[in-house]
Length: 282
Image (cartoon, rainbow, N blue to C red; front, side, top):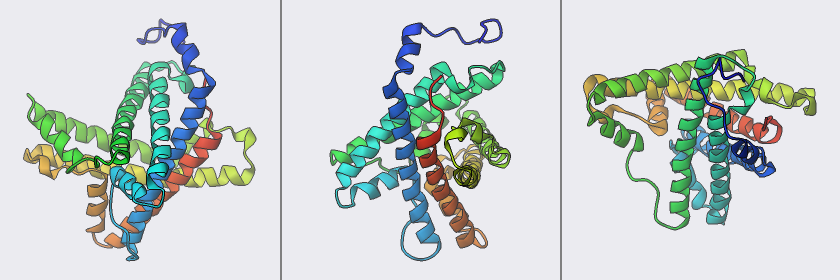
């Protein structure tokens, strides 16, 4: 990447060598698998709730709490936690080096990707911390984290505008996910030569369905953030569980929730496929 076309400075070679270490790839693959497990639990519980066979609407923290209550729950959650830490490491590598797009020269896309990777890394770092607390028996987070963060931003100068812009940005991310699902360009990140035709087909289907479901959820979360900003009321904000709950209250809500829940399960399968076949490294 030429320095002339990019505002991002060169990364020191020691950092590049550390990022290229085989253990980084192992952690990244373990991270995608852990992410898949978390979304599978969220999707399964929501699907059960939608179809009236038990379950409950929850978010990623609720998924961790569900895991820890199972037989050998702390051991299972410890494995997931290691995976989440690995995913955070990989997201930070993407933030610093953007290894999967090093040949692209569009500055705006580079910056947007790196910011997105950083935000995702911080979010999953918070989830990993919650997992550690659960393993230690200190309990998870209390209350609605989305509402708490919204209230903090509201208390800042121009906080209402910041929340509103955050909501618009979240809606934009949701729409971008829907577009990504439609175009299915995520396939370029797979080692297609190592996959059978059937595996390629299912990877595409699961990716499109799963990413589209995430797009819907992000758009709903963004809508509520905009509502919170317009009404200057942090309690209007909703996170993942709130977004799913709002879908269930719409006309044909059980069907809508069920479809999105199945989409999240598809996304979990897609994440497991990423763990096996995603191109990781330079």
